[in-house]
Length: 223
Image 1 (cartoon, rainbow, N blue to C red):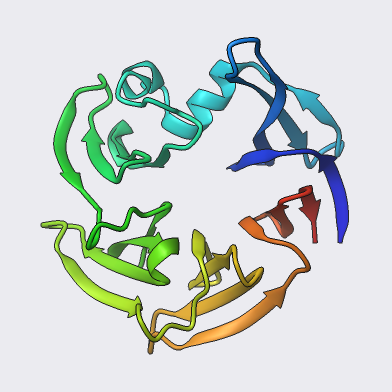
Image 2: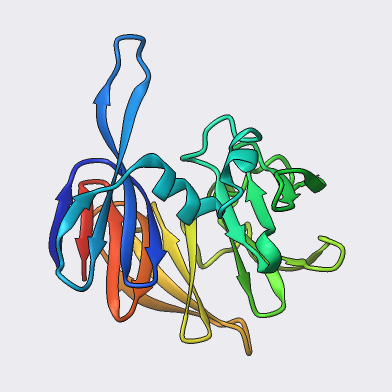
C-alpha cells in the first residue's frame, strides 16, 4: 500500500482514465473549510489541480448547477448519474431527489430508516442500495416504487459502521469505518465475506481500471 496524498480527503470520483478527489485545503476566518480538487491520470500518474466545475460535472453531470441548488453541502451529498442525464441525489439528512437534466426534481422522498440516515448509495443488481453506519445495516430499495425490499444487518450484523459502497466483479463492496474492514456481499445468496483489513478507519474504496484506491483517516492510498 502506498500513500499518494497526505491529508483529509473527502471523496474519490472515478473517471474514464483516472480519479478526481476533493480534499481539505485550508480553514477560513469564519470557521468554514476550504475545499480543493485534484486529479490523478493513469496515463502519466501525475497529480494535478482541477477546477471546481470539473469536479461538479464528474459528480453530478452536465446539469450540475441545478443539482447544486438542492445541496446544502455538495461535498457530503451523494449522487448517481442515470441514463438520459438524470441524477439521483442523496443529501446529508437522508432526503433523496430524482432530478432531470434541467435541475428540476421529478421525485422527492426520504431514505431515513428508523431515524437513521444513510451515508452512501449505489445501483447494484436490480435495486438501489444504501448503507447505514449507525445501524450497522444495508438496505435494498426497489427502483420502481422506492420501497424497501431487503435488509442485511441490524441488531445482529456482520457490519461495523458500513459507510461506503462500491460494485466490483458483480459483488457489492462495503467499507466499514469502525472495523476498518472491506467486505464483499454476493448478489446470489447475500453472503457477507471478509475481503481486506486496514490499520485505521476506512472511509471509501474504488477500483478504476485495476487501480485500487482507499481513503483512510490519514490520506489517500493506492493498494
